Amino acid sequence: MFRVENVTLKRDGDTIFENLNLRIEEGEKVVLLGVNGSGKSTLLKMLNALVIPDSGELLFENTPLTKKALKDKATNEYFRRSVGLVFQNIDAMLFNPSVYDEIAFGSRQLGFDDIDARVRNYADVFGLTPYLNSVPFKLSGGQKQKLALACVMSLSPKVLLLDEPTSALDPASTAKFMDMIAALNITTVTATHNLAIAPKLGERVIILDEKGKILYDGTSENAYEIDLLTRAGLII
Ligand SMILES: Nc1ncnc2c1ncn2[C@@H]1O[C@H](COP(=O)(O)OP(=O)(O)OP(=O)(O)O)[C@@H](O)[C@H]1O
Image (tube, rainbow, N blue to C red):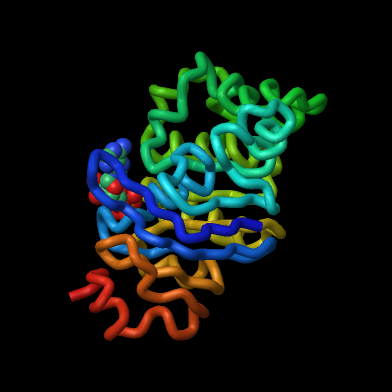
């Protein structure tokens, strides 16, 4: 589904990734771990084609995600419809006058014909029905996170890229969200620091070291060993 081939990415003169190689197959549930600054958010943004590599190749379903390819309307629309990213900084995602409009925004952009049903369904799933007429920026941190998830999930993407999706959720909402992810029959890549929930978010674990190199890529079974997590700087 995704192929990252020999990708090098620099930002402001700093090398974030050097010769990064990675494949993500359809249906995989991937957990992305790494200390602050290891490159998790940047990798998710790259998979969402918001950040384009300086060199190497990034492909989605065999289509190279280059600026040129994404200028093609059909390619861009197909990609945007297929891949959804929930940002770590939720406020950057919310700009509509009401919760209803916020959830409806993407569906309107993509020209879906069942917009109202999508909005009401996902508002219900995330407990946002009472707030449909509220202004998004007045919601609590956790409610904003639920709204961001509702916005992206209402587009029925093939791939969900999630950056710390439960950081503001209360324990019950976190548990409900994890069950939802587990039940979804789509590809997910979830970046988290939360080692308590990580094992439930995916069978495949990728751990980045502090320099953005892949320290571990394998099954969940062997990912949470103390020695490995210590080397990754995730525990002391
Ligand atoms: N817009 C940007 N311009 C320049 N450098 C950036 C930018 N965004 C991130 N970086 C740098 O890229 C590196 C990786 O950052 P990134 O946010 O991807 O890490 P992260 O693993 O998601 O961290 P955290 O766990 O704190 O969210 C850091 O060194 C950061 O300073």
